[in-house]
Length: 119
Image (cartoon, rainbow, N blue to C red; front, side, top):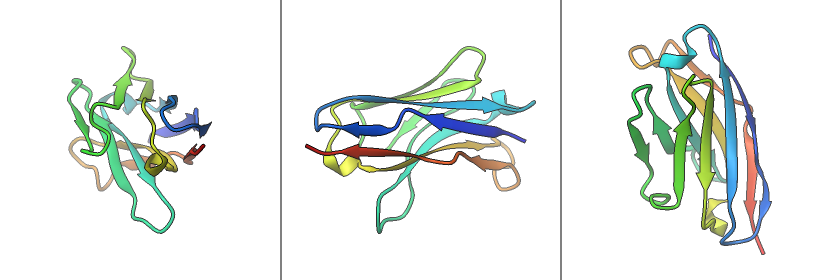
């Protein structure tokens, strides 16, 4: 099992920056694929970025060049650095952990944190 606790959301002006954090715990948390998803009102939840234990990353086209996902050496913390924020980035952001071999059986979500980009 993996437990996830998120923090870092808030209100920011267009062009500003925020850093989201996700604390992961559990005996096998270090091998899980970690990801950030977001869900805007009236829209489906979408993948923003993900990172594997070995460091391989994936980004949505809409955030490439602006967002960066990372994890610490102990792999207990996952971060999403968000720069040059746009109003369309407004959403609830969720941390996710998925087992690299059995994601259907072992898949966990954080509680979500609100990010609002507005002038």
